[in-house]
Image (spheres, rainbow, N blue to C red):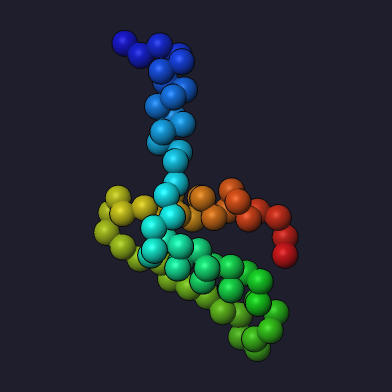
Length: 71
């Protein structure tokens, strides 16, 4: 059985986000879309796709948690 301290450490470990090359590129693209949304006539968008469990939701959550303030 896991103690509360070990559960907390496990949750910390699960929350670690490592910015490899591809996720970093996607995050940069998210920044471009968010920061330059008012420059284009049509609103830019991006579709993020991938296999189940590859980290799409984790990437979006990481980006939102670190950039939730309005631009």
